[in-house]
Length: 40
Length: 232
Image (cartoon, rainbow over all chains, first blue to last red):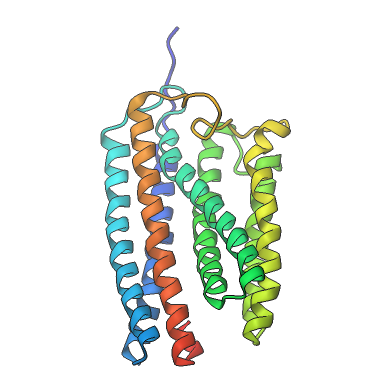
């Protein structure tokens, strides 16, 4: 039986971009807090 | 600078380094998932969301479990460092939960035909997320450190009780959510190439958890040792 693989790559790209934004955003927030704290 | 502040500074630096290495690891996981892992024939490319959704979900559950366990030990020993570790773990757990709760619907829409459904696994996971957002809000609202640590430890322990229900909800209730493919009594039910990518991703997310928590914990210790709450 032939199975048609769905074309839904857009959802995967969106998930990967959102994950990268969340993780990089939190890492940046930690880095900024650390830079400020270490300067004092 | 006091020895405690020096140790905290070293912890922050190590945490940032580890976080940086782990973020490079996330890029490698993306490359591995996209170019070196087969596409599932029925689900298409959306199945590859699995390689970030599952490690983020497991990471969040481990983070929240550690909050509960460490909070229990805090109530026994009253060591403020345990409370600061629990806080760090809760914050990182919430970040991982946001990844889990955004990538899940992005997989659900093409596969289930809906962004969200109120089934047991999804609903309990959302409750757990709200509980730990409440935990962080509670910490901001109570200024006295010992009182704040005691109240938040109780909430952290309550969160720990919810974790097994989240994991077992796919067995306890009729649910749309897929059954575990890895954390189950029998052998993993997936091809070796997919399993390899998943395991590497889980290793990277574990490293990311360690890096984030180390940095956050170091910041909290530094704030406590210098008496500067803005550093926290």
